[in-house]
Image (tube, rainbow, N blue to C red; front, side, top):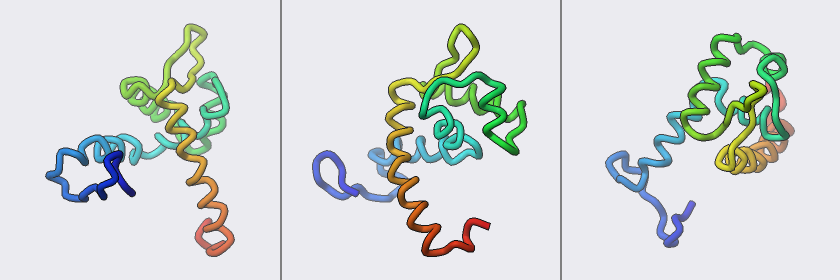
Length: 115
């Protein structure tokens, strides 16, 4: 991975250039966060439909995670109480496309890993 200047970024925690990436990993590394973005990527969903799609995620946990994503500027709650991605959220959703493609290749190489 290269920075905009072309230099390879350091991985040192003390490097201020890493702060945005570390903050993003801290936020998105929480359980259910990326799953919510993934589910909202195709379009707006109401809470009940989103909850249905989330499987084992409880309603209370989903509410907390939605609040965190709203505070981070990745989703908005519309007046009809449905949720949709912001521009930043859509950019993140699009960035998950290569991860999806990678997961399909990985599944074929290590099918037992999905268990």
